[in-house]
Length: 285
Ligand code: NDP
Image (cartoon, rainbow, N blue to C red; front, side, top):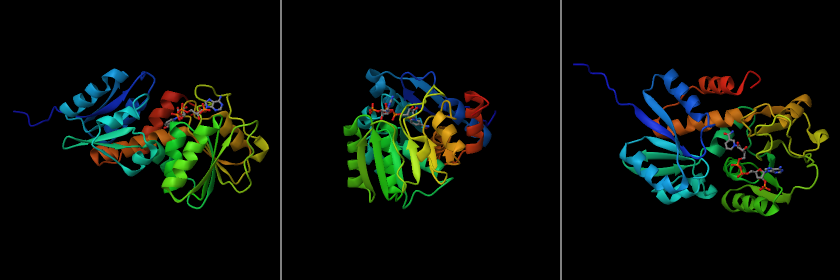
């Protein structure tokens, strides 16, 4: 009789729509390279089916799952515990199932931070953060917890920017201010890191957040959360001006690596995962 196991570890993602989410290809490439017998299943889960999907994952003894739009806040009602930053952010994109208990984490900001730390340590730095949606919120909280000195949140809707600034001030040791977005944003001279956390540039290589190009100094780190296309117009302009640039692929890869560490306690090869995304997004990635 064979002693081989035909039972794979199960992980995956719940969101809708989800057909264009490449995370499955990236994580399964990581599993294969590490010789881990695990699957990542991309599931289209409508809001009214979220509770059943979570129960199903527990019943089938999944190790954990990602939650993407529109479930990042709604999933919290189905969890037993929240990690510190998920509690502050108020959103969960990664759930671990341990002994039937569901623990929620937020790896969006952590993934961004891991990729930022490859080029600079945000501790003590002043940051200009463009956008005040879910990605900006996660990034702002993680930057605050990582010791950034000050975050200026700029958003079309200034109330959303103030909500994030207050969240940072109230929960981390970082100073934060908010501003509406009028005309071209000028990068202040004391800022060291500029982050586009808006959705401008997603699926449009020529779209660019309104930033005064002549204020992109060469000593700046300019990061973009947009994974597709990764070489956004903002990053191309920043690179031309000599800035250090960071694309959204690193954030996507690192949040995947961190998720699998939470689920399986194993660290996947980020390089393999990055190459998989580059193949998917094209040669210029
Ligand atoms: P949200 O919808 O929550 O927020 C979108 C933000 O973009 C808001 O601040 C919105 O401003 C701003 N925005 C959109 N269009 C414009 C415009 N024309 N001018 C000015 N501001 C604009 O989205 P998320 O925060 O969830 O996601 C943002 C981006 O981050 C997405 O493109 C997503 O792909 C990317 N992302 C990347 C990840 C990665 O791993 N690389 C992970 C998660 C997200 P307002 O509030 O005024 O409407």
